[in-house]
Length: 189
Picture (spheres, rainbow, N blue to C red):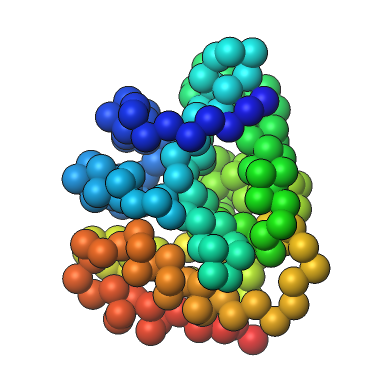
């Protein structure tokens, strides 16, 4: 498995995103195209045996030495074959000197098995659910989600809120009420 940076096929990736992600979790194509031009927004193709099996899109927050997964997907015909595990492993390998990796995940819903399956997968890969009340900045509202963290190093006392603010300022420049959404995020005791 290798991850190859590729900002040339954003239309093809976006078309796949339309089929794999809930509409309220997707950025507009215009925003996606705008982000793809930023150095800290990295789009990787996941390649196995010379075949593109999916993609992972991250924000590289060099200041905090953390990465943030914006989207990760394995193409439908390759799902449930262990490729998600390989992609996350390769990402950790590429960013081994970083503190870790953040990931937004839909809240578990007993009426939607895929949400439970997704959370269980990330936990099995070492992700830790952070004790915060988190909201994804959707265009219309603040979408309640869970925020997970894959620790790569034994980093202590990470300022999660600074990382969130930095990533929001990169990813969600088109969301008008961004500061209101950010201010809703808080520690859960």
